[in-house]
Image (tube, rainbow, N blue to C red; front, side, top):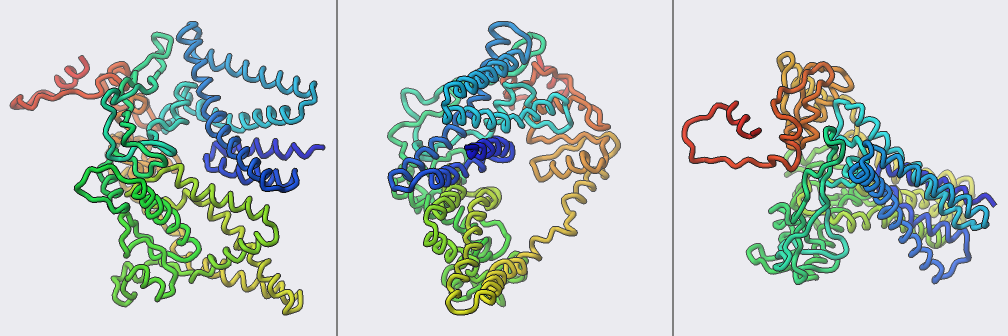
Length: 557
């Protein structure tokens, strides 16, 4: 009678895990099928309905509960502050009071009417929100104004923008444009959502960017179902699409749907997923980044010469340069973990088809479905194998199953005790021991202090109370670590130029941090915030020089 409490626990863990990564939601379809197999008698029609319901549930959690609860809270905040004229955060407080009241009413009503399913659903929704509320820590932390406070999510409006990852933009998944699509002639652009910021003087949220005519609207003649070649934000993306899909580099013709699918299978599935999968269960060539599909860097490699040479056509290790021939990340598993996993998968399906299907869903949704959702572009700045780690976990379940498969196969040939020992030893030698021996040297992080030492040297080379300008993540994060964790040269102000074009970051730089003084600035927030003086025209015809103070005064005037 209390079995539903496990559903409540699962719902809570789903809400809590959102604070780590949205990938956790991809377990919902697999768990939905497990629930169906446990609760109901199996039938094809029932299984299909359970799968559809699981997909709907995934859509509700990801597309409604997570974004819309916060979006509604932001709308409440804007309405009660801007329209009613109440103080900041009053809309957020009213929203929480109403939300909690509705939940309590729903729980009491469904319990009184003995509506078990609806009561469980409301309770599940409630604990998802409780888990999801861990994000409130961001608001509390941001209001304390710590030295590291990216995006400054101090209120409901700022938190919504932060969690929607608006700075990363959006991309088509089911239907959308090709990378060389033309804009619609009648309506080339549509409006986006306006950007609000808190204005302490006015006591309300003000629009700093109306986002009018900011979203490209492409011609319907240049759109397609399942668009895989869509990005026009960088010229190299177009070059990558043409290279992987076999498009003519000079022609501007819209790709065909078959070319669209060719890119999907060759690059997105083959290069951006299966290559990483094979790294983990067949072997890896080396750890050099490969952005263009060349045969020398970052391919999967088994260690079986005739297979590797047939695929890659690479010379033997004797003819290769030292950095490739003896690369520590040249890890060869000889297909053994892959074979064990396949044995375990077929054995699992043979012994318990329903369980095997649930694991298969977990495997597919954390692998191929992520590829489809992310719609990844060519020339990624780093290898993305970490994004599909869930599918690797799923496959290792089948590697574990292979021990039972081997035991089952040998059960009629040797005594049970000897069989158990023999099967375990075989599995240990063929997978964990082999993989550990191959991977240890390139995964051993002991003695690796380059980032830390370089950051310390940067800081210690500066004069007292200096301002140190940096660019990008790799420069900045080690410096932040050394100051925040190890307390090295906290008198220095680290300024990241990649973030310095945002008003929230300029505000932070104008505050003291650690032992460092604020940066000197004659501008106020109203003079540099987003939507104000985003660009200043320069007259190149003027000869001679102009005093920099006059330039700054002119910009601020």
